Image: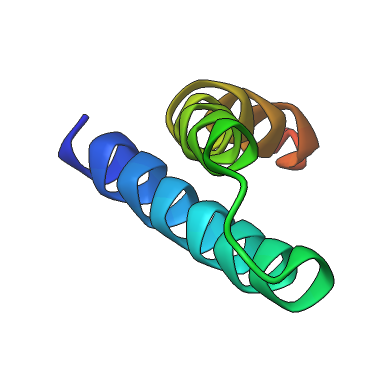
Length: 62
């Protein structure tokens, strides 16, 4: 379970930093609604969706 939280925080941090850089380059100033959205979305993906996908992709041993 600890690995899930670390993964969630890592994806949240990565996504929000990338969005901060992109919004700063394209618009000249950061667009905070997008940054917060990527922060929340990255956490949800890293903590909940990714582990389920990894379990489904794992080959079944006979």
